[in-house]
Amino acid sequence: MSEMQYVTDADFQNEVINSSMPVLVDFTATWCQPCKMIEPIVKQLAEEWDGKVKVVKLDADTNPDTMMQYGVMGIPTLMLFKSGEVKERVTGFQPKDKLAAKVLPHLGG
Image (cartoon, helix red, strand yellow):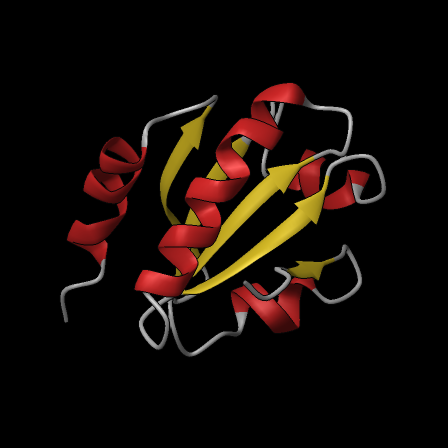
């Protein structure tokens, strides 16, 4: 299983907002227990959606500007960006089927 790509305040615009494909951003932190619980689910979805969705992580502790810009108050928070806009937002641990159900409607077409 490959390591997830991390984005930062510095490259968020280029990697997420300007991406030609939808991007699922996992706002996370190394000390966050629910983040550790959701990580294998996010990795599975990244593999299943390879070529359809770019999946990246953003460290909450080292990227405060992006956290503030999108009003992320709790982690884990997952946000789906499509054409530079937030299309879906999920905060807290969710089972894989619930996460997929929120994201999949935005991937058609």
